[in-house]
Length: 293
Image 1 (cartoon, rainbow, N blue to C red):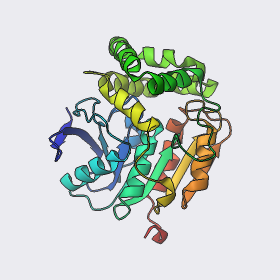
Image 2 (image 1 turned 90 degrees about the horizontal axis):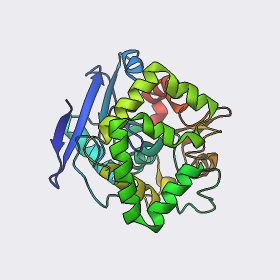
Image 3 (image 1 turned 90 degrees about the vertical axis):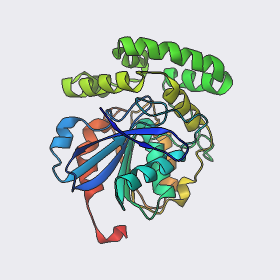
Image 4 (image 1 turned 120 degrees about the vertical axis):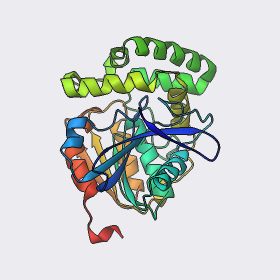
């Protein structure tokens, strides 16, 4: 069972820890939909004995209470409160997919506490100047985001129905986005360790409701509450060139606008290839060069 802290507004925020309690702290920010169980597979956690992994359920997912109307920027406040409760001064953050913009929020809004940020398969802000946000995106994602923008009530009803189906059979989620899966994605999500993690992740994320999924989507489509161009911390941007859930144009936009970005583009990788990149990403994230400040 996860632990929990009580936020100032009364919400419960659920979290879980793994690894070395005295190791380098890394806060994990899960995808959309997702929960604390869906960022780093346990075999990779076990292979990093000097790292303290901390993951939490964003509001509305898993065991965390809902925070309706939240922006992406709220992740910084929640992570700061979690770090305070755990006695952490400085830490790294790692976000994948829908969690990646939330990791950027931490880097932007907690500059004295975030050492480094790793951002994998991220979307860019919807109002990014010069960005064609839907270009190159899978039809299933375009349809979902468009419905959220044009008819949020219908979108919420549809998510509730999908969440009920996924609770009964988590593989339904991967089946519903099959048009966006590359050959490499299919290979990765079919591997037993990855498949087990993803299915447990989806089941736990949507165990009680679809509110987290709904609020995440609306937050990603709204103003994020911070400007990526104001990030001063080192940021590793990892992206697969064949990703159709977070198209490469989003990566290119972020690489141009984040001052200390270290862009890594894998030419034959898809969206879920980010999971295979984690060992190298963690090596970078936990390094302590003097230039980090």
